[in-house]
Image: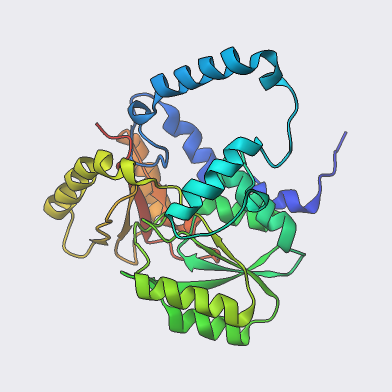
Length: 293
């Protein structure tokens, strides 16, 4: 029996990248593809103590349904402490707890996007965000980047000339996949433009300050190796933090084909074409150092 799925599921269709990554789970593979934190940095002991304390204080009630917005005392702490620490004055009514940034992106798409609406994204941008917005049948306007992040003149031109812009999606700190950080002056201009054109900003900012020193040595080791071993016609970013470096190779090299050859040598990375809203851009790749020893 042929089952007909919703049209929005086309955004999650089988791709060569998904199929290739099934091969990258081999424990013998040296994976420069993962975008996850290093397992050894998770505060396991702290979580265990907090969980035990919660059960001791609240008993079985913590297993029951709660408000869909999240546990009120936690939301209150986030509003009064976490948000205030980053310069945002708000209240508990404006805080929603999600199961991760991906759910937050999905909620933003559900709230704002109708079929054919436009999301302004960095070029390149986070692949999973593209998948999510595409499921709401969004279109995209890509903003070019340099070493200081998205170029504000390009953004302003898009906002002036593009109808149906509903969201600006940005990843300003150690951007995924490029590793670039948006400069302070451009952050201020971004907010001013969003206010001028009445377009909400969805900021995806997953990196907390304590994590930066953990990855510094791994980043330095990767950058030092690339500077020594890569040919002169290959360029790459030197991130201030985060997990990734963005590599640009010769235009005659297709990094999807290179990925296949690398897997034979037991190495995996992310081909860059997956990180753009529009087709093309085959001569890039994202290298991650987060899980390297």
